[in-house]
Length: 278
Ligand SMILES: [Zn+2]
Ligand SMILES: [Zn+2]
Image (cartoon, rainbow, N blue to C red; front, side):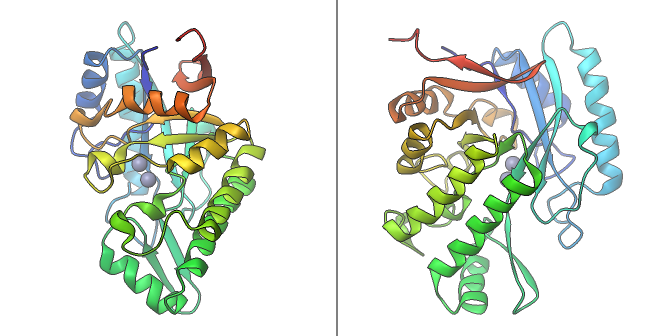
């Protein structure tokens, strides 16, 4: 099987490096029949990477135009990467949404800490908001992931264990520790129970942060065991990353025990069997 879609992509409307049209052309060149855009939803407290409200409207308009322009070659689907700390959105304006947690908010300091930006900010969060107790920090993160699933029921949960991004060589915590994995599995279970598709996300690898995708293999096996739904996305921020590590991620899905993989289509997310491949 060859994957023919990517539902997690960014453009110059948010923090991507290429225009939407360049991304569409890259998707066609990669042999896709569907490309989904998931621009970052507006977050009032941090405008550094997300779309402004005005840009969000223009983003939708441009994608509708591109859908029409390229309709003979590919289907352009309009999604949104909806951050947990963004306000409510008009769901009907989007074909699908990816629910993602990029921040931990601390009542104590009144600050939003980005967990996937710099090790310094990650470290500040750990010391200022959690007195260095990583387990408490992980609990806050995975509670938000679970709340995202129950309260918003996004079609897809983005980079389930994004907390790993800056943790190469177990710099901040031991990823194999049972107490940590139990928190991650509990959140995964809530996502599954709420019908959310969990993505294998190769974006952190593409940017050189980690040498395996999200979620970690142990977590992926657990999701397969619990009959969770999986999709494969590259969280592409440029044209070169459009199908990054897709064949390998597909093999990982099979190795973890999945029988099907979900892909974005004109009709929304659909399952594709992995069984005919021996
Ligand atoms: Zn994200
Ligand atoms: Zn993203």
